[in-house]
Length: 507
Image (cartoon, rainbow, N blue to C red):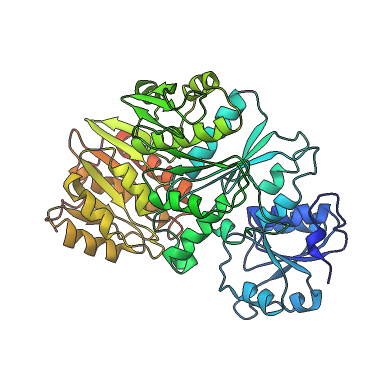
């Protein structure tokens, strides 16, 4: 078997290396495409794949072996005699194909490790800024990239955000900085030491809360995966002062000599922090006189004008500003760039206002921690909640926000524990249960329920605190269908027929 430790460059000899790629989604196809470009012999296996990707795989010279319940380990895999397995992020440690590879002693890499080893294809390798956390990753990655680009750097967002890192490192234009969004799945497969270990310029874990416990097996395993983001960081580990777990991750991390710990938070910052003084967002970390004064980045009013005034979004601004400052972005460039940034769709996105009722799409709130941030932003909420809960307990979220709930509309396949938790911890709150199973009907019914009880001053907030794949393609599909249902209902003047059930009794 070939010595894989020497494969640490695009220009190493990857020819005829026998590689099995698990999965043919976005990252799986990018891995297969990259390896075939390098001259490797690639066999992809998955339980399903789109026709278009199967055709493209054939065109570029790859092979495909379908996994099925009857043949969880396709015969082609044993015949192939793989020297390396590349695993797509969603494959858990207990997946039969992962167990097969381990039983045979075949090295397993994730797509991020492969990209790190190959990052020198286009001239000098780009610096990497690594971002993870239970919530806020995408917004922070987009913000950081926006600040870097505004300062004149060639930067791109990549990773879990949608653009595979393997595509970014192969872009012929090259980049100064790649801002990498990393999921806990990707970090699980990332080594902390050795030739494949990432060495980011700067890194952050924005926050940590229960999520994906069904995949990782425990909160401790989930947090351990997240903490990998800080390993080997060169310049600064950015942590959340309001989340002590992230500070402990930094304290425990093995980093480069001279690497700094930079805190961010909504309170008054210390000499190595970013934070707020009254309504001014300030930097005391990257300032020659940081023990006596601070640099003004922006104000709460300016952030409000850009739609960034919610507490969790201000935290994202602070984290992104710290990461950008690590890359040398000037204060003036940050101040100017923040005024032109807009949050991505499906994250605290206003959909409509009618009759004094605000309708908000926060479909990206796929866990209780994200939903908590959304709920805190409004005083009186008709809450659309539920979906695929991923083994996470929603009780604490309901208990914390019961006083602000006018009503709850429960959707998804895991409705029972949500309804039970509402009955126990918010007994005065009217609860509607959407029993529709047709994807086209779920949000239409949820909107009708919400409209039947919302009054002037309320916010109808779709922040499900759960994943979407039980009834929708993804969170974007769920959010788009919600927005469409809201607009259809409001443009139709409301539902004047007698098909919308009356509000139920409390509890």
